[in-house]
Amino acid sequence: MFRAFTIPICVFLWEFAYCCEVPSQTAVGGTHAVRGTICPGDVIFEETFDTFDLRKWSHEITLTGGGNWEFEYYTNNRTNSFVDKGYLHLRPTFLADEVGEAFLSSGTLDVNGGAPADQCTNAMSYGCLRAGTLSNIINPIKSARIRTVESFYFKYGRVEINAKVPSGDWLWPAIWMLPRYNQYGSWPASGEIDILESRGNKNLVLNGVNIGTEQVSSTLHWGPNYYYNRYQQTHFEKNSAQGYDTDFHKYQVEWTPDNIAFSVDGVEIGNVKPEDNFWNYGNLQNSNLDNPWKAGSKMAPFDQEFYLIINLAVGGVNFFDDQATNPGGKPWSNTSPTSAADFWNGKNQWGPTWNTQDGSSDLIVDYVKVFAI
Image (cartoon, rainbow, N blue to C red; front, top):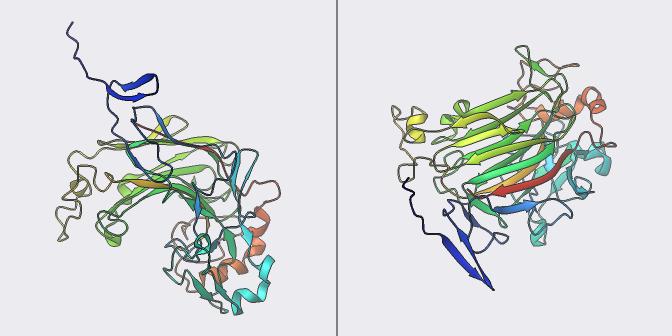
């Protein structure tokens, strides 16, 4: 039988040569990117959290609310982000415990730091300076969001994260990726890859389905602008009656020049494979808009380098549906101009569901691994 002959791709090291039978399709960059030849299957990034390496993971410092008017203040503080016994913990705490209740509605919080590591990272929506009023209080929850924006970014590969999501009403953990350079324009034109999202409510139900801790989801965000975000076509959910907050699970994405597939514990939950390009995949060819991806490949905008993000958000005005039912109700409406104050005033409802003493309200990550393809 005829067998095609392939010329191996080699790099010559001291005393031996390391060869790939097939060249990798993965590209990497950043201060902690691997050097030299990359073969399919090689680990190109691994974090087991034996220590908290802040050369790899930089903190976001902002009050911006993630573009969703969320209720958290992201900061660099070992109460809110720390490593313990080989696990990363992202933990929510009350800002009022540090500055007093009155500060939320009468104080001014300036998160512009002098040192490079303390600088505000996002000024959008008053993200660097907030003055509290009775109707628009300062973000009442402290939390953390870390990223590899400078240290590691890649194009095409397989990501696996072993993590345990938190329980606690209105907690919103996420592990995801954003483009390093926004080649095709501002969000969502350059894409977003959400590997894991969940809601911390134990008994949050919408249309008879538990959308709280019994559900996890993966999503691609993409579109020529905010109003034409086609994420509904690339959103996938998986439910388990045991709840994803009771144990660790593996969240995976395989990203190739032909498709993006999401899996939970090795079981595929969604596979996006555009036949020709995402413009047609989103039925955008009949719009009057210009195609921002026309110079890209069939996977554009998902043909550029992306970096990793891990965060624990709280609330906001779109992720928690007003129509969902929850024991004790939902203390704010997504259309309320005082949503953060309404949320905080309802802490007697949701506060008892948070448990930071035993870590059950922490987003806990065991490891993050990225493999070449």
